Length: 128
Image 1 (cartoon, rainbow, N blue to C red):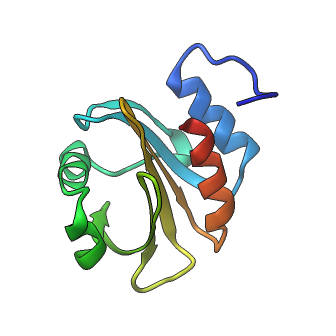
Image 2 (spheres, helix red, strand yellow; image 1 turned 30 degrees about the vertical axis):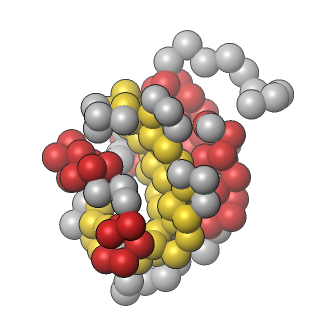
């Protein structure tokens, strides 16, 4: 993250992302086990429940690409998979979506509400 300030907490990192990148509307950083390390709050609250996140992470396999995923009660088709990265688009509104990147120890999910998937994807890659 060259040129970015040092962050003391994951929560501070998320606040910075949402302030700097307005196309990211909600975000969370999780442990591989589904534990929430940080989630966006306030007007940008990441509202996906802990149980739904655990189910999502446990199903991070070929099924996710065939069946899609549900986050916050909304169904998404998975459009792209690359090096532990998936991109999903809402089945009813293709301007809504998420980008998720999985590392050895954590997961970052960024949700966007405009067709700016490539920008959201680039931000998530910096987490890697």
